[in-house]
Image 1 (cartoon, rainbow, N blue to C red):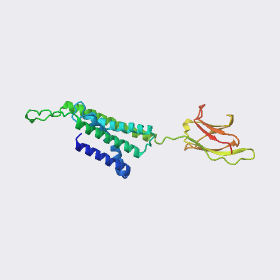
Image 2 (cartoon, helix red, strand yellow):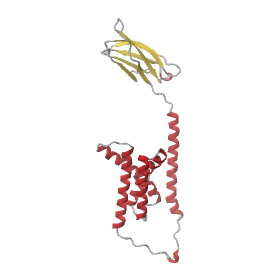
Image 3 (cartoon, rainbow, N blue to C red):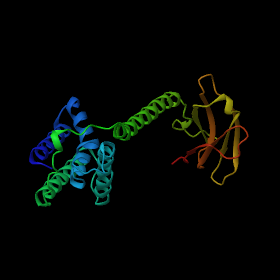
Image 4 (cartoon, helix red, strand yellow):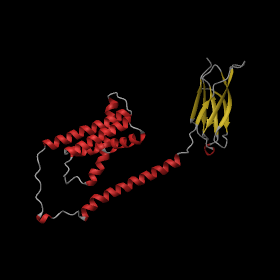
Length: 261
């Protein structure tokens, strides 16, 4: 890595790090994307492979940049977490920035200490080498196919997220129980939300501390998939409210009501 390239890459790394840590959202987002997906991979590419190396083509280098960047992010985060550090914006920024700067240093060291490779003689008549059709297909076509695959995955992921966004989540909750009545019982309001009529009928079973069944109720949700009702439970027992889906023998939602203090 020549000094100019090293200086530009190091300067861009420092600027991106400051943007992530202290800049507004319009600067911190681009800075974070560069640190996460671009800068560490560029530096490690230069540290591992010579710029003129023929067996590492354009496609390989292009794919290695985000891959190596993510490797720094993941491995650095694992090491930091294993050492007891906190994983937050500052720590992720330091992992990426320090990884990039270390790789730049290694690349510069290799350039200065490596053996000088003699320049290949110029072709007769100063004829420039043209990019062959075979090389174009070898370098550009795989990259184009990778871009198409990524675009397809992105479109599918977006469509799937839209389809699953409105999926209801079933919940079972209770309000604080009322006061103990003369018979030693308490009244508690129980609410079930997100019930699907097609999964019914629903049954609510109340059991006591020793597991004996205290009461059983058939649940019919409204058009919004909600049900609210009041149950009478013993005040001196730890009560479990189990909600069963039609035909199932295992409760898919449970609620515990502690005994009165």
